[in-house]
Length: 327
Image 1 (cartoon, rainbow, N blue to C red):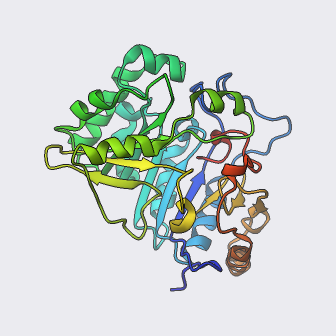
Image 2: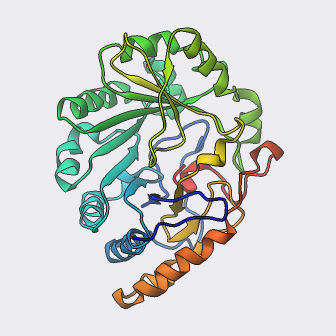
């Protein structure tokens, strides 16, 4: 089977598909005023369009799929979306990123539909701090859902925490206590500048590499990166059941291992989270007979993928906030 390859030799077996731009949280670093749909915005892709899109990507080697939002659980037919995705030949890993508000209630049906990996956004283990960051006092229920996922044997359970200077950047001891007996992956994500958060970014950005240095000094050992892995540099320690990953988009050569493409909720292909353009695929998702044309369109765009993002120059592309593209 052919695999998408760009002009820099990078291969792309990993697709991140946003299924809805809306989110029910008001995270300070993303949607501090909550989600508001743009006037005239098109509806998200429906189930037949999603099935055709995924068959097209599977035909060019996609085998890892991550469902994102906004917040995917806001979509009323999310379980059907997961079932549709799991039925696509070639999809071996079906993951989802969520804020976890419905995890304790929907975990079993999502797993029955084919979900086999989950990332839950948990920016703090302190309830009051979590509420200040997200706008919701739901931490206890979310943590219960995470423990349920581990107990249920979900193959991969990971947490995402965005590092915020003078907010949650001193919580490493609490996280280490949490990871001691839980076989969970924790990802610390460096805050990224987007189109509408410049003031917040300047106030709260902290380099993730500083935390990485603390881990290395404490005996955490780097792990080799899997071929279909995300961007995290992962570490393990003999005294802890959990692992820690560092996502540092401002680090040297961050984009060298890029292996993923993105499609927005309305069907635009994004070659980079911070790219300057989107390629509308929705017109090619209206009939099964368009599969060959869709495959050609996807493959033909890789020549336009740049070697790296331009965050260091303050260029954030057409991404106003992370919810708009699925992060």
